Image 1 (cartoon, rainbow, N blue to C red):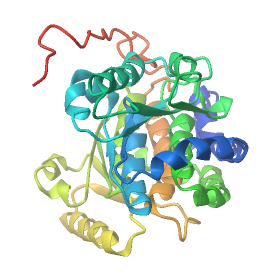
Image 2: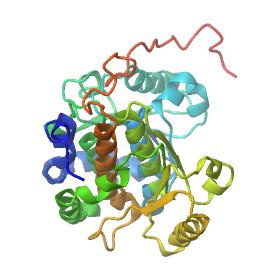
Image 3: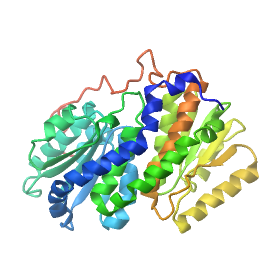
Length: 375
């Protein structure tokens, strides 16, 4: 499929294609700030009772979903991914136990109301539990915007560390693309520094995908009515992000869904028809991959939907969390092509302003009063 001019001239197109360079720039940032980051993180990670909570809204929440699933095994500790939208709505259900907490906040702009409220609520509740959480909540902020409120508020704050990503990752397009992958890579490398050695492999593999972008774009020519993304473990979070990308960039003209290969049989498979594209995100884990193979066999035998496997060559030896960084690139290309095929403007798929790049209209209610007491 030829690439329409409106795709190649969009900011979103440029931000998708800049990702290998952004990851290399991140490598330099982590190399330079590594000692300070380790001085902040290592004493916390030495505490066996530390609870790590990863948070963000929308795409930033999916960064937390992927990272939590990817980091539990190497860190051998508890990690919870809780969207800021859940945390702000019911903070006492998140911070309800006497364990030290490291709150990791992911934010492209850092200006979303929930992003700012989440860190403040965490501190407020830590003060309420002062006898049990003697040193309060610690904050690691991973953000793409030096002048966002979250970065400005936390840079000099007590018990906080702001990891500012390369400037180009503060995407100007509607959808999060390079901000998503670079925040995810930053989190994986921050907690497992050995992953810095894998950045070049990821960048090389993604460059090859970008050089043959038309292969993935053909999957949405013509655009399907529905798209389903299936993945397990860390790739379940990527499946969620993939569905959101298609939904956002097509302004809802393509209905998009996500699930795990095993979970899909338990009802959601009912949506499959001959206008559906099912995309399987294959795991590199030999055990988990058996379930990918099973659902592929089943769907192909049904011969109803179009079924594709989204894979990126050149990722041999990498765990699924890191592979998700590169697998996101063809997902973004697919969503971008679907957007243009539907006649949308990728940088502004909602010209009427019904959905915004930075969420508007959110009112943050005070924690006390109005039924906000202990439950």
